[in-house]
Length: 76
Image (cartoon, rainbow, N blue to C red; front, side, top):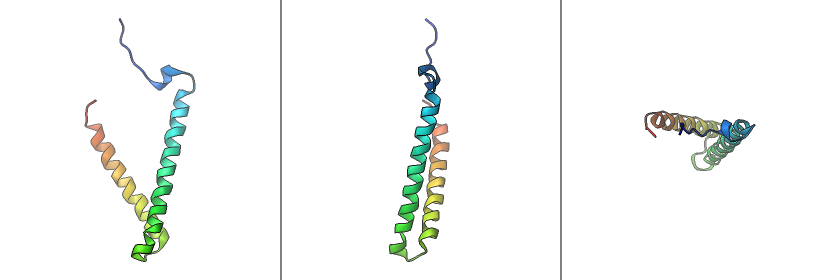
């Protein structure tokens, strides 16, 4: 038998679009949560809520980048 490869493109037409929209919405929800968590951090630290929110977004971005790069080197 031939080699079997499964991908979203082989599943049904428009599958890739659905995948991209789903991941995009997930990224938006996580970003909003990070911004809100940073804004709530204002009550503990007393720093400007916007500064705290942006700080949390930046920290989250770096955490994502490090985990993504580590994942590139882990074989499946």
